[in-house]
Length: 212
Image (cartoon, rainbow, N blue to C red):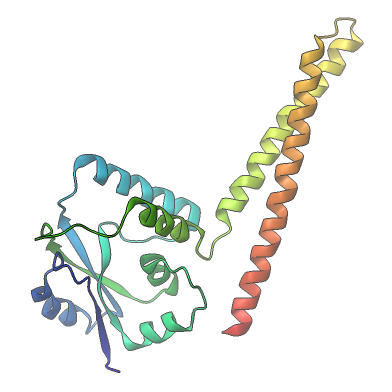
């Protein structure tokens, strides 16, 4: 119900008096993010958030806006598309970025919590962060496969050096061959498991496309 939907937390750290400005921007954009200009977090927390969003962009392939939370205004067509997704563990910003609608931003200063403590514990934050990185992306699996290839390549090079040293009559100690063979086997195992994961991911995307 309604052409526009306002998403806001109930702790009043996000000021409701910003809603008219968000709705005004929503006349020309499908998604309007409320961007935090000044945050109440400490330096360490801000650094962790910045590192997370950099990692998020690298592994998910999505360009999510920084310094945003759930506070935003969504057009009805965005909400309808959002509700069509079958994911149960949803990363709000990742989904909005992935949907690909036009966006704009309205800056604001977030207030400190007036009373009480947040129930959004570290474990929940980590879970949401992981869901965002894994959402609709196989980049992490691709990195795993490439890492497996790199480990296997080191094992192959080590094995070749051992064979060469043995050929010229200067065989290396036994531990060298053990390490090389181990690296080769571990690298091959990582590659196989990563490729299986990529294949399952492709099947999932194909299934999602068929459902849409």
